[in-house]
Amino acid sequence: MLAFFNEACLSQAAKNNLILGLGYFNSNNQVQYLKASTKSKINGKFRPVGDIPVRYYISSEDPANLLGKAVTNDKGIAHLFIPPSAAAAWKKSAKQSFLVVSDSTKEYDGVHSNFDLTKSRIQIDTLPDRQIQATFSEFRDSVWVAVKGVDMKVTVKRLGGDLNVNETPTYTTDSLGLIHADFKLDKLPGDSAGNLTIIAEVDDNDVYGNLTTEKSVPWGEPTQYVSSYNQRSLFARRGWSPLWLEWMAYSIIAVVWGVMIYLFFQIRKLKKLA
Image 1 (cartoon, rainbow, N blue to C red):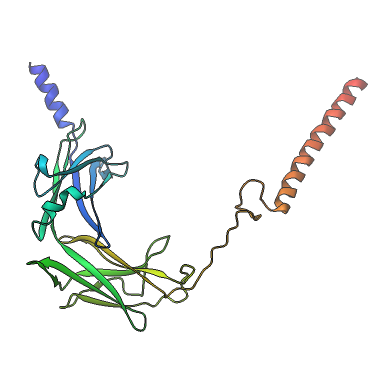
Image 2: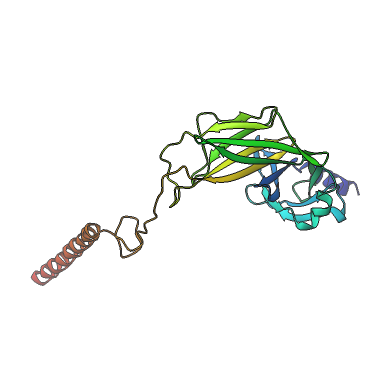
């Protein structure tokens, strides 16, 4: 009995502490999802922990309030889109609470985290002279009320990462919940009609979470996509490499084989002479 007790204590002591985080994301005031993150301090450094089963709840940790389940990936991240079944609980109050609970594993004990959310939204519009206006408001007493002092970024969507529309990295809303940003990116390639996508976003706010709103504007340079699929280039598919490169490669192969054949016949002559 004593040996069993000691083994159980050692097993319990060997478990690392798991840090569980929860974030709320709202895209274009339409798509909402939760992101759980798991990490632990291993060998003196915080590292993501994968393969951790987690459960998401709305309002309280009750089976009736279960939103769904997920398992963290190798980066310690697990996403869950808020299902339509949560609509009734979502509409009950202007403030909402989300919870995430991790299951106990061999290496980690189960932990939980919560995020207390105030419902909010971002509205974006454009003004003359390529000026951008964004309004931040929260839902209070059944109406949308402008919020002062919220930090916001205004960027333009690009494939390699969003770009700030000018040299100002962040803006703070005024008493009317407004921010104004001048678009100063000239000759930026857009789609075939010159359209660009402007994004107003709030990142990692302790009260409102993460919100983004997009708007298409014709402030870019029109670009036409030209396919190079059937054109010879260094990055083309097999059989479509440049002719000079193929000539060089085949010439080297021919020279190497020629030398080998020449040596073969020379060795045969030496054997006959011997």
